[in-house]
Length: 242
Image 1 (tube, rainbow, N blue to C red):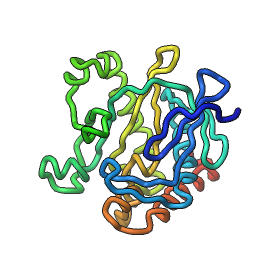
Image 2: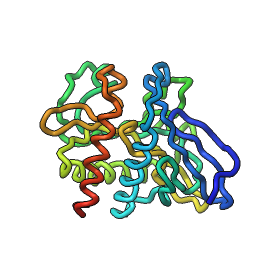
Image 3: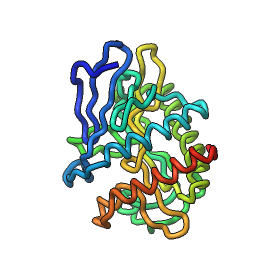
Image 4: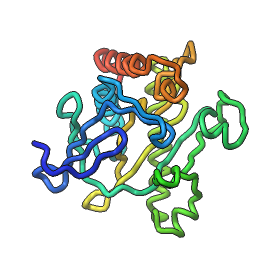
């Protein structure tokens, strides 16, 4: 299957049509952005790592019965995915306090929450992806009630599956962002990517950050952190631990 018409370019990916009307090809870029692209850089090899990591995690989630847009990884930087219409809501699931949550509410960083916190954000870069309520999503037509219930159900299941998986890799899943889309048959699917760009990972023993926070906070060795995530995932796959 080959790339056809260019469809869209985001911060971290390009999307192309294929000869199948229901499938697209995603190309992972080396670009790195933070704070709604106010901070930008490019790191050679980052796109390949995110493609490898996201492909592996989508495969894991599919094995656990979670519906996703992922079809298969083509090569180091390309995936084939199902074409979807994106629901304009980003879902963030938090297990430990950090990032914008601490800044917004004045709570201390590193507090383990008694249960996962699910937040909704409007997917709109021009507005800074503002926090919204379920009523906002329903009253302004950004989602249906059925979609919201399903989105929350899937997000919490993703959290359960990935938290258990990464615990086995000596990694704490701190929080993560998900996006969803609706395919040609009207099915709600997990879309976008699952990677160190969209998740916060802390080493279990050292609390060393193994995600895009290294770029946000100028901690250095961003690529090394992504490589470490992939090293542990690939070692787990080889050992059959998944």
